[in-house]
Length: 209
Image (cartoon, rainbow, N blue to C red; front, top):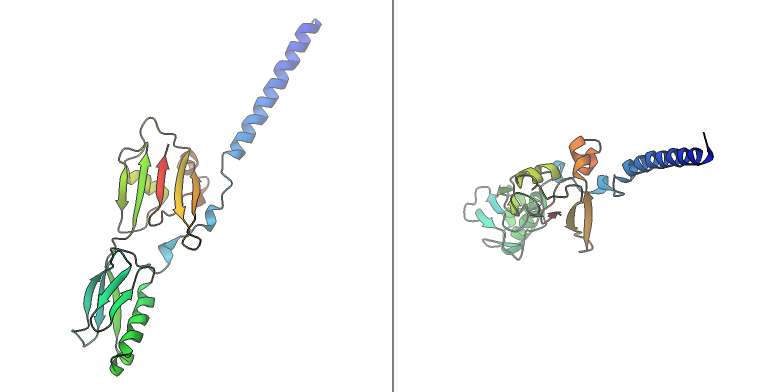
């Protein structure tokens, strides 16, 4: 074999090795460097009341104080005798304790009263899906959904979708800053990294480019 052919064969072999290494590297880099496991999963925690939720408040043996209340846009409800109370962001247990304390300011018997706070209608769990999906818009659900379930609610992707470039815009309740969470659908579909299939939180915005 002459020298030019040897050099050409060597270049082909080097290119093949680089290609193989490149593909291996892409497989590793395909999983985003994001701490998905640190995102909240409220499915096993007590429900957090939000704007639009309808609450059933019952004060045992005191029908005049029992009421149904819808959480207003300012996050408050109105209760007989007590007046306005902040409900948004509270759990039913925490709100029940606050009601009992406030009632105690007016009625001594309220200190031993049996009070229940039930979420009669959970209307505050809403999120937005936009971009290359079959049905864009604001979605709601009676239970928490994961990313895969949310995409199914939107009817799946259009044929133009870059399903591996999905992002979730999420506002941090502590800092009020918005962070972008990368989602790679191919990884979700394979089930290789179930931690990426995070729970969609209220007011999340999912974008499919």
